[in-house]
Image (cartoon, rainbow, N blue to C red):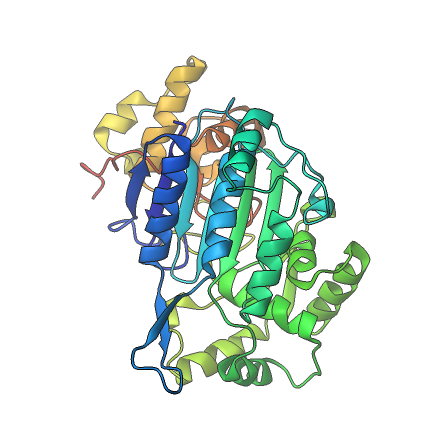
Length: 394
């Protein structure tokens, strides 16, 4: 499991099309070789733009992300990942972004990322990478990635460190900030004067579907209080809607987004089915905040082989058997915690999340359909490495 997986996902969401989930390249090699192969895979696959400088005889190709950003992100994941967790580093290329996910949260506090000084859980690996001039081990990698993205007129990257699941996620949007299409979209969105910070937040939500205080701070290089004030203002204008509470608060597209979505469709920028304020893993996904299950998600809808494996009422299967069953269920189709609890005859879906689902995500056995926001109301679980159990599902 100590490998690097490069995963190409069609569309903007994880398992958007259950019939074409993803293509993957598994890189199994000594560390330095693996870094070079991963960097080459990302570089060769990214969308290319080109220019023909005045006086030049040939065009100059440029990747959608600066090459040094790609290298820094991969090296950071290899150097700082937890090798106690049996899970692969995942480099996921979506249509509009690149995500680099590694097991293990950041030892350095999230608010100090980009500041001088490096804290690492793998000092020997860090020393090797430093000696061969692959890493500086001075804490400059995060800041360098931010500065390079902004120098290329790209939205700054976001970095999310969580203890449950125990992982670190770096996200890089391919989107150039405030191009003419963005300005036209923002004018269709609201007549209110928006700051550059607020405009970045709205473009971020359009591209990723949600934003929280930490993401706002990352893309705008600001503090918690300022982020809260601006997010509440966007909420009061109807541009964003608040979900969750406390430190799990996040924001999704608000009512005003419908007008801008209509505008974007009229300009041929997006198809109707990919409106930014809808996160749907399948045709049966409920609307945000819905607590009721679709009638199709019940034991009777399962393939016969899966239905026979459901635990009998009052029994408690062993943990390993339960994990295997959850993987097969989520390979059949993306399922929410509530739906899984119902299928397993459990009353408390939150206990299922704490006991099994979150640890399985941390181990790479399951994955989120909306990885950018763990507590999104439309969150589903899928089995990224399992072959879907489709026999009899129709």
